Amino acid sequence: MSAPTEPDGAEGVARKGAVRKGLLMVGVALAAILLSVLALSKTEIAADEIATLWEQANAPLLVTSLLMMTLAMPILALRWRALIPGGEKVGVFGLTGIFSAGLLLNYALPGPVGEFAAAVLVQRRYGIPAEKALAGGVYARFLGLATAGAMAGLAWGFGDLPVPEEYESLVGGAALCIALGAAALGVLAFRPTLLRQISQNINGRLGHGLPGLLGRAFTRLDELVARFALAMAQVGKLGVKPYLMAVFWSMVAHLNVGASIVLGAHALGLEPSIAGVVFTYCAATAAVVALFALPGGQLGFDAVFATFFTVTTGVDLPGALAMTLVVRVQQMIMLVIGAAALPLVERGAPPLNPGTSPPDPASRPPG
Image (cartoon, rainbow, N blue to C red):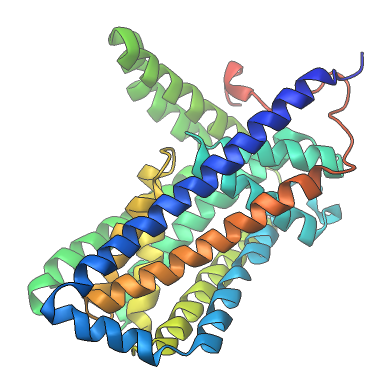
């Protein structure tokens, strides 16, 4: 029985709507940062500094930093490919487009919709079962967050961060929590059954014990964790090398973004602490994992990034907001790439094989 063609039209309409919504969410984030900068520019203290940043901005260097940040996308695609069973036949540029498209959908829709959609695109484009692509993507995200947390902890422990004395205990506590969270993610990445058990004991019980909408929300969350746990369990026989390669590509991606942020800061005439930049980016990346499933969670990243940048790099609030805006513009560029790549990746790709469907492992217990 061949795949029906009619739902593809509905799927295309839904996809276009999600693309518009994803771009809209990033536009909202950009507007929020711009309004903050505008509000600061009306104060006597910050007005001169914002004007100075604008006047001394080196446009070619700033564009170079934005392009450099965008290189993180193929690097993250390489991280994903390392964890896909049979992924050696997957093209890096095609996978970069699929990864960007999945990121766009994650901005638009609640939950990790992008991971599931990207897994289906990998199956359509390269013939690799969507379950295997999903497993690699979930593992890559866990290892990426764990790597970011570990790098933030190292930057705090061994870097010379110009943190004001009154904020040392606060930032130190945040660094410790993030490092512990990174260690926990690392353990859960290698023991997905433990993740499933924790969710069953907490979310599962709350789902059965609470009435109405709240109970259904916890049940849905437990099902979502089941999907993650099962997907990760399916990658367990790859061996050590793919995991090491994924950690390596995660480090390269984080350092690439950190270097591009430093370059962008220099383009604005700022001189931030390099260790502080690494800590800020990695800590913000790891700290907002709790907001991953929420549309608009990027606003949380912006808030954490601006706060840490001000406290740990020696740059004051106007400069920190300017750099937050630079990073958000880079995110917008990646999402535009995702929006452009989505129809290109799907063009000419065969439909799902007969009898197959997008991965839905929640109905089966993880093994």
